[in-house]
Image (tube, rainbow, N blue to C red):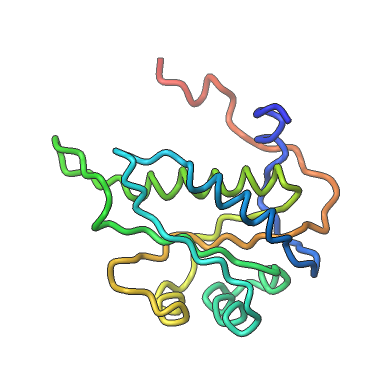
Amino acid sequence: MKFLDLVKARYSVRDYMDKAIEPEKMDYIMECVRLAPSAVNFQPWKFAIVTDKKTLAAVKTAYQREWIQNAPCVIVACSNHDESWHRKSDGKDHTDIDIAIAVEHLCLAATEQGLGTCWVCNFDVPVIRKVLNLPDNLEPAVLIPIGYTNKAEVAEKKRKATEEIMLL
């Protein structure tokens, strides 16, 4: 698949089939995540793939939306600010940039494998910390429900025109 076609095919899925993801597909997706670039190649992240029914139900309580309930898996992307690169001139921490790159690699790889995903950033962090027993140095940054979608067609993306996002 051409990259532009892949980008056009990826969308925020909010309707999943009750179907498990094959281990080889998840392995492929996580290999794509592993190869994501990060500042100074520090890779300041950890990912939890949650499929166990009890843990999955507990993770889903951190995001009070009905649609997430039918996702067969939620991946929790965690940032480690202690391991991230900080720009020398102003101390800018690049962890959020690095985790965003890795998560988008995950979402695009999932799309290529015929799976749907959705970025979820508005969730109850303390709930995720408790459910996954996360150490203090790991910040749960993004929940990514992932699975086979019930939707056959993708709606046209509404984005700004190229000239609207260019400075010069």
